[in-house]
Length: 280
Ligand SMILES: C[S@@+](CC[C@H](N)C(=O)[O-])C[C@H]1O[C@@H](n2cnc3c(N)ncnc32)[C@H](O)[C@@H]1O
Image (cartoon, rainbow, N blue to C red; front, top):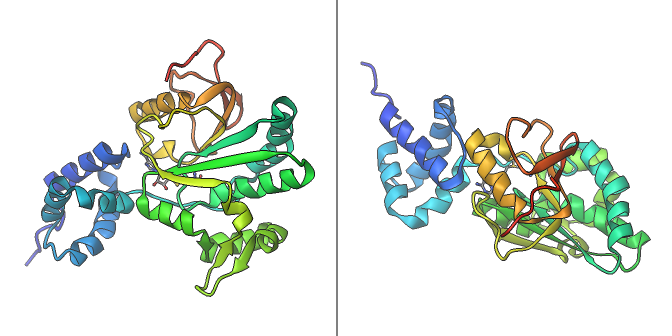
């Protein structure tokens, strides 16, 4: 006898719509297996027999929404992911910002921070810049929609692929900024954590309190949205940019098909167009 499909078409469509409503992520029906795989353990934990029951739970119980978001987001990240971006930040962005803004504090936003590797990579560059430029000050705001990811970023204790890659590519930085932890991971140093602030934020909305950042890392998140939602995110992020600010996207992302306020400076790196004033 054939078993009835576990995730029927109508429930799949409703789940996809719910993912889009809460996160903007465009899942599409091709993500059926991924959704099934990710949701099933949660359904088991809640003793819910079917996907329709889980859908009802998310719709009726606000406390379930953060768990749902944790399950449907994809959070892959690495320290110093896309090396050419980090070479630009270290060799061009930081020296140039310092020349034009001495006495100010460098404000950085890691806008889809996931488990924090990106923002701690930036903190390492800033600490090294500080050692060579006394008086340099910086702050990094890390945000993500996933509560679970923010918790990992707050802990700053890394193991597995993240650390293996860092050991291969940046052994001196691993030695300088991390220490072994009794929990079987390596812990980022207090020096890296001291200028970092982590907050929950949905990129479909404008970041509050209103603030303009010198550098926004919006990397490897637009790829999950359809064009309309990419446009919304870019419009919201623009409110956090000043005329001199730099925004960086991921290497497999492109915003060239969208009519936006951003001008390409070089691959992945954008400024706001001079003709695009912004009123938060
Ligand atoms: C692949 S990770 C990118 C991590 C890092 N920026 C990098 O490039 O390595 C994508 C992150 O975007 C987050 N995300 C997805 N939708 C979001 C939304 N609407 N608002 C804020 N963050 C979102 C996910 O939770 C996930 O942690």
